[in-house]
Image (cartoon, rainbow over all chains, first blue to last red; front, side, top):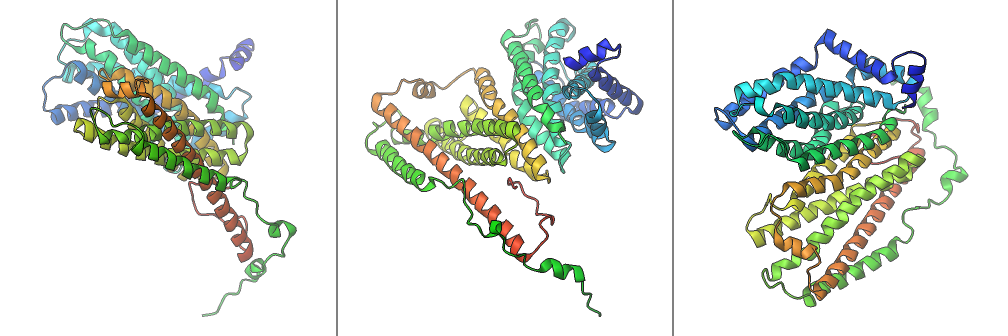
Amino acid sequence: MSTAVAGASRGRAPAWLVVLRKDLRLELRTLETVPAMILFSLAIFVIFHFGLGRQSVAGQEAAGILVVTLLFASMLAVNRLFVAEREQGGFEGFLLAPVDRSALLLAKASALFLFMAALEVIAVPGFALLLLGPPLGRVLGPLVAVLALADGAVAVIGTLVSAIAVQTRARDLIGPIVGLPLQIPALIAAARALGPLLVRHGSTSPPGEWLLVLALYDLLFALVAYAVFDFLLED
Amino acid sequence: MPVIANPYSRARRRVPPATAESLSPIINPYSRGLRQLALITAVALLVAYALVFFYAPLDANQGFVQKIFYIHVPLAIVSLCGYVLGGICAIGYLRSGDRRWDMRSYCAIHMALVFSIAGLLAGSIWAKASWGHWWVWQEPTLVSYLIVILLFATYQPLRFSIEDPERQARYASVFAITAGAFVPLNFIVVRLATAYVHPRVLNLEGGAMPGPMKLTFYIALVAIALLFATLMKYEMSAKFMRMQTKRLRRQLEGEDVDAPRRRTAVPSS
């Protein structure tokens, strides 16, 4: 990326890294998003326990519950992702800076990815403790791989949808109703990839075809987002 | 109570003098060839469905019910192409900034939504008649169809919640491009996720149809595509005329041209 090169040549961090650092510092100081996502996911696990009337779940069912919970929790972050930029003039500041606009996409998608990773560090052990029947330690590696790819889809699509929704009147509504259908294929692939892993004495390697589908989905939407994101900032 | 006379409003109420621009006849760029297209469409639909009922052979397994295939599948194919067309027109808008591309994109997506809901209903009826259920999760086409409809159903609410017409067009175009790319991807993923594809559908779509059936199907497909084109053109033409009527009315009533407009999801200039 040209800005990254330009920034590095002057001995400064590239623009996207600066924005990302700003977002992470903001989150560390206010603790607005990630704790809310964690509480939300734990509450959903409790709801699933009572809704399904089960002591523990396994297999495809467990994969579905985990992925759906993480997806719903991601909606909280997606709704908040650009709010500070809109309310406190961050968009204007960014547009005035002589940097490539894609830097904002990269920064926000990275922030969302890190928020999801932070959520999963707590929520996945919480899930194993509260609901999951089979032990998790055996499949930790493949589980992390699948969740990382799923987080990629959440990050890319969530950033794009959030940037659209934040400029609308009903942004809290537009974000989820546009974002959820776009995430369905990623959800299908992630749930199918996790299903065989969460069976007692089941497979320890995830189905390759679904990992491939997830990776392709991430890649294609990253390209689409890269192509159209600039137009969302043109004001 | 004293009547407040606003000296400024009176001046503004005065009908502006007729200018050459306001008196020139309105040329609707969208209506060119609409009548011919409508006639061709009517003929094509008549021929196609005459063939469906009198020429195409009855299906050995399903009998008469299978005829809904000639409605359901063309509707599905044409509406999916309509969504992708909406995305392509949106690319045109973002590249050129010409509002007519936004109008095309809007009408393509609007018509595709109408066609796909009709296609979904036809598919559901077919599923009930041949498999005994209104909804079949094993049919990947139906399921992906539903997801696509759920996504595109948010297009109008999205437009409606953005007031500034220019920003509305731009954001709607970004949505249309993303969603247009989503359509084929979604179909691939849902098809992969469905372990069991009903063989009958595979047969019909996979070119295992007997000759007369295939011919009838292709003619029905062309007829439905023409219907889509006619309705889309008609909608664009009606939207354009309504816009012009509004503009003339505003001019006649002497309202300030910059007066706040009613919020709308429809492209406006």
